[in-house]
Amino acid sequence: MGKEPGSTKFQTDFRRHLRDQYISDNLVHLLCEIAEASKYVINAVRTGDLGVAGTSNLYGEEQLALDVLSDRILRKRLSHSGVVCNIASEEMDEIYQVTSNPQGMFSVAYDPLDGSSLVDVNLAVGTIVGIYQGNDLLQPGRKMVGAMYILYGPRVSMVYSVGKGVYEFTMNHLMEFTLTRENVQMKPSGDIYSPGGLRKKYTPENEAYIRYLEEKGSKLRYSGGFVPDINQVLMKGKGIFMYPALTDAPNGKLRLLFELNPMAYLIEQAGGAATNGCVPILDMVPEGLDQRAPIYMGCKEDVAKATEFLNGVCREQG
Image (cartoon, rainbow, N blue to C red; front, side, top):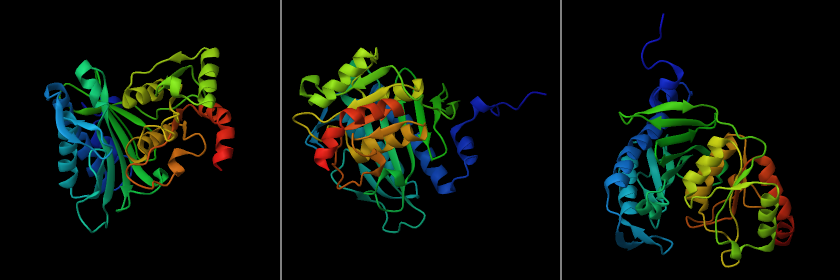
């Protein structure tokens, strides 16, 4: 006797899957709200204005109209979810308080459209989200109760974890997310590398590590988009992404709260590792919304080798 339609493992929709994860109803509701918001974001990406908004964000970067629209979509959805007390966005200057009562509530940090400058040349972009219990956003990423990203590419995929492994869902023709991969796992080491930043600005230690990767035959795979590059490493289960300290940017480029913490959470849940070269990303205590850090994330052995090359730098900093 055949199973009912929609009941086989890889026809499972997102909400049904979450109900089997034994997490709170409020967290299920929040994750589903973010998934719903992404449907409006992808519509904006496909049809929206590619021009500038005439404003700048906290970091002095010119905001694109798509950045502002995507942020508005997510903020409105989260604000009206009934389960969120604080919101922090890469596109906002300060934490937005939804309610002063954190009881049973969550705080959410997100990058609404990472890589938005790539949309006009039709490359993949994405949304990155980190979820914390209560009203404190400035705490180590290890205290997150969930993280996810949505990749807007040839397919729209959503990758999430609530501390029980990493799962991938893909949007079907009805704009529903259905399960496509479960318990995603990283191999101990890999043969691809995604190095961000201008190489002539690499420190000698990072340049030596790149030469090591090249000599061992690793293949360069870098799109310029953080979400698609992490997705490649995670879904292939091999390799390393790095955006190191640069001679003119000792803390790198990527933001701890909005980009690094959620991705590090997912990578670790898949059996990989993520570090700033000295300490695990998830153990860093954010000092502010705008904090940045160098990043090496991917296969454990590849990340460990990177830290070997940086060992002297860490001793000097210590």
